[in-house]
Amino acid sequence: MARSNEPLFWAPFFAGAGFSALFMPAVMIITGVAVAAGWINATQLYQLILHPLTRLFLFLLISLSLFHAVHRIRFVLVDLGLKPFAGIISVLCYGSAIVGSILAAIFALTL
Amino acid sequence: MKTKEYVRPMPANWFMHNRHLQLFMLRELSAFFVAGYSVFLLVMLYKAGQGEQAFQQFFEGVMKSGLSIFLHLIALAFVVYHALTSFNAAPVIMDVRIGEDPIDPRLLIAAHYVMWVVVSVVILIVAL
Amino acid sequence: MPEKSITLEVFRYLPEQSDEPKYQKYDVPYREDWVVLDALNYIKDHIDGSLSYRWSCRMGVCGSCGMMVNGEPRLTCAAFLRDFYPQPIRVEPLTNFPVIRDLIINLEDFLHKLKEVKAWLIPKQEKPVSEGEYLQSPKELATYKQFSMCINCMLCYAACPVYGLEPKFLGPAAIALGQRYNLDSRDGGKEERTDIIASSEGIWECTFIGECSRVCPKHVDPAAAIQRAKVQSTQEWWMSLLLPKGAK
Ligand code: SF4
Ligand code: FES
Image: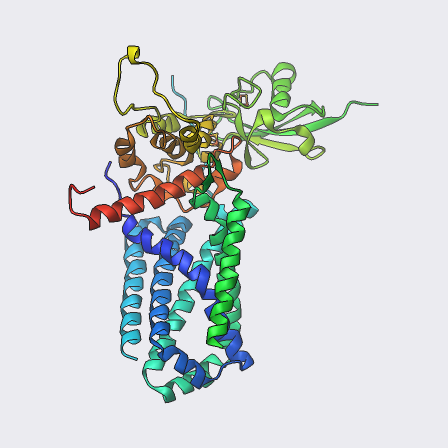
């Protein structure tokens, strides 16, 4: 039996699991709670996003989280009975993660 | 002689069978919120790229809206759950040993929690 | 005082009588120190000799008495009546396997998978008996010992939804046993085994639900064996992609 090429997708899935677990809640507190509470205003957040390190960080967070999430979504859909469409589900899932990552890279570079 | 065997098909709602499977499904569903929030970040990044004025409009009009806050809070709950399950899995994935014996899995999990809290606090201090 | 009793609702499948299974109720005496298997033996000896099930050691070693006890895969020789009394107990054959008769499942598929994964020692280098044993330090033993505790009871297969949904999945115990030999310092068969373990029907089917490790009566932790194999396999895959052929 041939070894699977699954590691191609599993590596970013796994990296994304750790990255999103570690960083995403804090970022959500900033863009959700802190914005609502007025701890940060539009100019401050804008300046923050402009910083090159923030852009690099956001690119990684977006891209890895997408690869993490679509991998799980793919398996959820298949295990909930959409097995006949497993092929197209994979294409749509990883396809959107790739597109999302490219967009994130473009946006982060052209700020 | 071979007699007919009885095959029991998996019920469509197999993930409701016990509490553990329900929690597993909750963990998997958290992926939708991880993805959703990533898309939000993507839009925010895009808006920032359109200049300060466009971003300000997005900030006041969308991010400060009740709907955005509401969605943020729900997604935050799911993402925190996702984070907890990820850190809880650390001892399963890593085989950390002192000599012959694996270290106490609770220690490994606690170390991840501590790291998580420290990183989060640092991010919040730097950003706010 | 009348003797206390407890009700067992037992899955009955008698292919020569009906294509459909039914549940039959039996009232058996309740004893504090009885396990579900004792109750089944009581039924067989005193109430209904036609009931069929497997068992052998009565002490959690042979792995043959696995059944669903109130929907949970258990060794019936280790499932005490007192944990359920006075509620009735439902006893069914292990899920995810075809039923041959009553509580007896067809375990052909599992045996086949054990063979496929080569769950035996493949020495690095065969040496004549005269050269003595293949030595191993306690530390080397410790790396795989946990995975070697498996008694082939198949509770993990019954608990695994992935196996239920995709019977081709190699499954928890077979992968854990494959890893047991892969991690053995005396073994040289890792390459052969990895071809099946890292195939799409091996570790990559697993979504890390973790039920296998939860129900395992021997704390084998197949979920750990599988997740670690994923990490290792992923490292090897990227290495072979990034490094030129032949380089090690
Ligand atoms: S891994 Fe555990 S549950 Fe699975 S067959 Fe072995 S002993 Fe039984
Ligand atoms: S009878 Fe041997 S394990 Fe239960």
